[in-house]
Image (cartoon, rainbow, N blue to C red; front, side):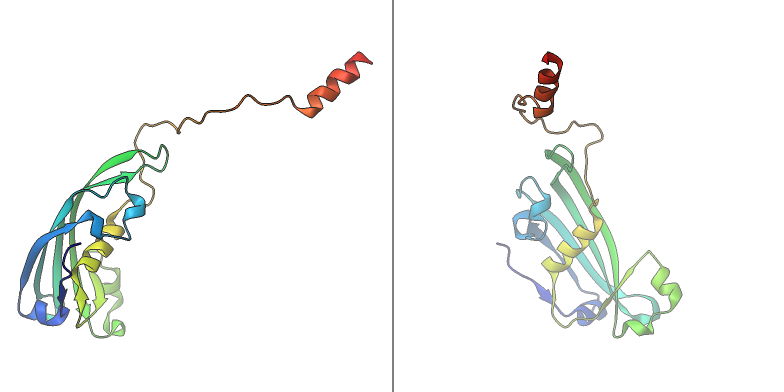
Amino acid sequence: MSQRVVIDSSAFARESASLEGEVAVADLARLLDMLTNNKGSLKYRIDGGLGSHNRPQLTVKVDGALSLRCQRCLEGIGYPVKLRSVLEFVDNEEDLTQEEIEDDSRDFLQAQSELDVVDLIEDEIILDLPSAPRHENCALPEIEQEQKAESPFALLKNLKSKA
């Protein structure tokens, strides 16, 4: 298991700090049910800075690959992760204007004195994934079907015709 990294989101951003590393896919517990395997790792980089209204913000970049489970055939799908997110921290969500809330270029989070970097990365990946990953062309899994017994109604029909 990778070592957990915890930062103070506001201080990290104000100091324009940077952090980079790798996180093992196996350490992303909330993702494991969506994957066909948990091998490999993802590279990340987090840069702090100040955004609009001098609010602390983080730029999160994650690169790598995951093997998602196809919802149709249940086989693996190679999914390239190339995530770029801007997260701006606010003390109170009520301070946001309607225009800021509707702006899709960044997301707003409550400032945290102990922000777990791996949890943040996992959250961003989950938000980036397709809701029902599927191959473009694939068939349903083949299920061996037992030979069906003759319907009781068909048996009655045969009896009626003999009478």
